[in-house]
View (cartoon, one colour):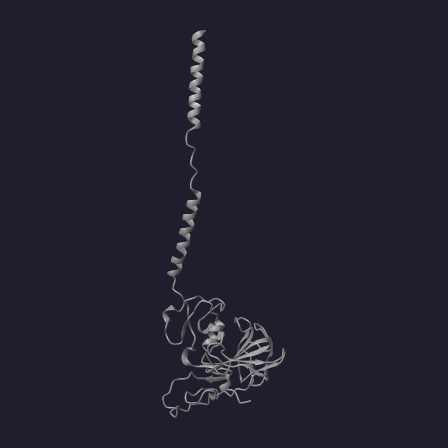
Length: 278
């Protein structure tokens, strides 16, 4: 009886030691899921630009050539056309753009007509070539009423402009701050075409211009009419000098006014120098 009584505490003590050892062993460390996920995301993020960088952009072989333009961030086809004296539809056609709303930064676009001539408002016109001698310009082989001679003074290149609205002038041309003239008026006042031409843009897709109309008069001149409350003509429509094309408004502006621009081969010029004296 004595030996049996002494054995039991020894057995119990051994069991207690085993249990204590199991409780003090280190717990299993879970797999580092977050670390592996972060590595996976980092790998995916760096792989995509590598693939994109190897893809040649459309027209990249023409970068830097005369008559071509490299798309910058924030550009639209309408803006590129306005800055280069062209209509967006012409740009889309010359560059085989299936969707003119999709252009890529770094893409190179043709911004001058292939072959050197284009039909505008039913008249064949020619691009202007620089001439050192103003009296040496040759007479074209056939009549070209809207052709622009390099020797003629600005404003006399086949286009005679009239004022596009009757209101008072509230802001003049400033190449850095104001690319045209601002003419005051009341909402609904008529806005008229400053010369014969063709509508190459009618819409509100150019930031800062509101409801905008752009007319192309020949290969030299575009005119722009901004901030209208209503547009009365459609793209590709031919208009006559003095025809009502819009109603004055204040779209994308702090007051009712017409913002009027003249672009000579895409560059803004002072309209006041081309308009008749009031």
